[in-house]
Image 1 (cartoon, rainbow, N blue to C red):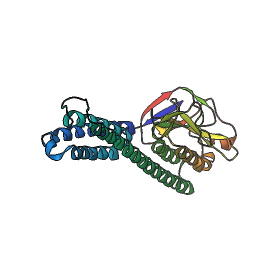
Image 2 (image 1 turned 90 degrees about the horizontal axis):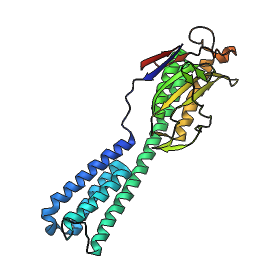
Image 3 (image 1 turned 60 degrees about the vertical axis):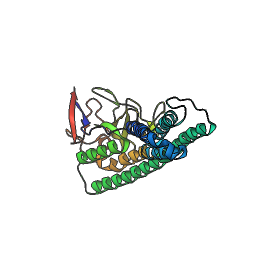
Length: 294
């Protein structure tokens, strides 16, 4: 009998959703500012109005990145043209200077949004790598303290969910590539390469829709068990995070190789005789829903 369990962790707000919210907020704010400045446009002058709207564009791009920067810039340029450029209430532009102002506003939004996106991406990757290194160190300490295999699997699975942005995971003991409810997905390569076609997502290449398996191998290369990693749709996983996932499996491999398989006996790597007819699946204690299949 195999037990499959999904983590209870709620799905985080995706980066694309955050960018969309920032773009919508920036567009509303830049239009509101354009309308509020309308009574004072003669006193302020077009140059100062355009500068104030550009500041809103910069703020939106700094917070929301490329999507927010471009969207807010386009909406700001249209609002500036319709509200502050003669003939009012239309999108027609008669003067070359006004055309240049609108174009520059959009260029500023694109440039600042791209810079903000690059800065956020670098910061996110650096933070992810720091967390990954910390997780590996904690696992090494647990292995040194002879923590039970259930604890190692649960802790590793939680780290993998966080590191790779997964929706869930489960662990299957033994070297078999099929269990009661079907075949396991293909293995993640030791280099971190993703099996099958490469599809780009936010932050890197996406894992296959059916997920990937992360083998835990003993010293002689025999597979002790596999983490089955179920991805979040549209979420990309950088190569550095995939390499850290392989390192996680390597760190706990010696402990699982020497551990008794749940239900009695030794692990497949320890006995050299994997029980492919009845693979056993273990998941973390933080999991919520369990499905059993005979």
